[in-house]
Length: 461
Ligand SMILES: *[C@@H]1O[C@H](CO)[C@@H](O)[C@H](O)[C@H]1NC(C)=O
Ligand SMILES: *[C@@H]1O[C@H](CO)[C@@H](O)[C@H](O)[C@H]1NC(C)=O
Ligand SMILES: *[C@@H]1O[C@H](CO)[C@@H](O)[C@H](O)[C@H]1NC(C)=O
Ligand SMILES: *[C@@H]1O[C@H](CO)[C@@H](O)[C@H](O)[C@H]1NC(C)=O
Ligand SMILES: CC(=O)N[C@H]1CO[C@H](CO)[C@@H](O)[C@@H]1O
Image 1 (cartoon, rainbow, N blue to C red):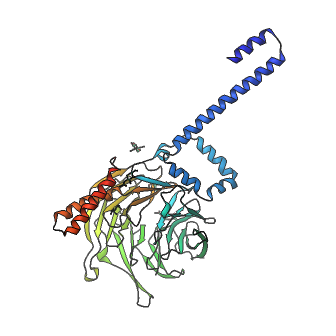
Image 2: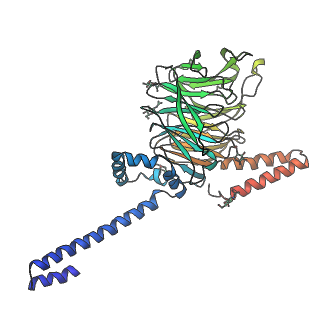
Image 3: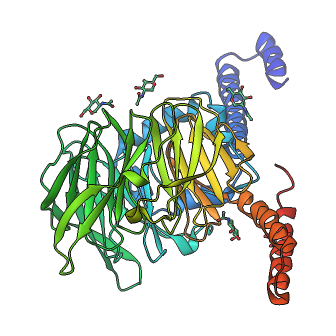
């Protein structure tokens, strides 16, 4: 409008001065429009960026992140470019009533997670050359503490805590070897970590499994071929095993620290006992055929344990999971017993399984889908889809069984074990049908009530 008036003036009267005014006026108008447009863009972006402000604050509270941005100009500008790209909907907008919080801080794919035995810390590793240590007490808090440990020229495919919680061990991808980091308390109560020991290289090909026995007696690594190594904690090889699985997909140590398990191309998971003599010297590792977890018709992708190593679960390429009772007298020739089996959504060529500490809930992950099963009924309770663009890399229950942690892309998402509360009710009602003392009855009724109260918050499946 104003430009119209000034345009009329120009027709009649003074030349250059007015022309200049017009020029400046137009400039100001354009500038104001631009400002408005930018503001709008921003607020839209903020609204979309993250529905959970908790997670967002958490990201900014991670020490080291902001300083990294300041140091490295190129990263900053690259990030800006990325912001302008069209948003990939499932990544940015994913939310679910069962999801409690998202742990952000990694800038690469999260590859592994592990809780310390004292339950105080969660360690996570990613291909961004970092290991993060999170304070578990404050996982839900916006101001949760975390420590970022840089891995020089390499990244950790696996990270595990030592049983005394004073060190963690990583497997480095490029060098293909283990490295131990000492963890110390600082004066303010939080932690620092420093490189302590590097083990010699043990395998020629990629390592697919690594663990530290809870009794502190050995470390296990296994390659994607068939070679598994049992190490002592100083980095000496105690023994090298052949898994005879053609190729190995999964290798783990049982929570009790007595067994190692491996699965792969063949349709069963095999178990070895790692034996030490009374003086603590390594004696032998021998396969326990009674505990072989079999019955699948195709390769076994993953194996999981409950907290007492009395149940083990497998997921297979044949589209089923199987839960075994392994609390048997195998020395007397008793075999592991099949407890329950079920079908899961097999959408990719690598699936994961996790078992709640009390073995009542079994969770499978395949591609970017999670499925929760009750092992009491064997039924599927809930499917959560499209958690991320990339496939899920790790699944982990916390020690209380309240939460399931899911690593995918750069995030760790924490879900409520809602299925566990539903199981509580079903199992308690089942127990009430039997003869019980009045104290037990009261306890069961209380458990049912508490679980129902909790579930009121999760009416939306
Ligand atoms: C095993 O690891 C090697 C690299 O060390 C890789 O080239 C190969 O593809 C892997 N095999 C499988 C089956 O993943
Ligand atoms: C799984 O399949 C994808 C393609 O569908 C392939 O790129 C990948 O290497 C496969 N992974 C394994 C472990 O076979
Ligand atoms: C998940 O993604 C697939 C493919 O993009 C889509 O068909 C499906 O509807 C999505 N499911 C949910 C629950 O968003
Ligand atoms: C249900 O949600 C409310 C509000 O978020 C919360 O105060 C309450 O503690 C929750 N109940 C349970 C049993 O978790
Ligand atoms: C299977 C399982 O561990 N369920 C647990 C889920 O969380 C509730 C609340 O802590 C527990 O009571 C369940 O045992």
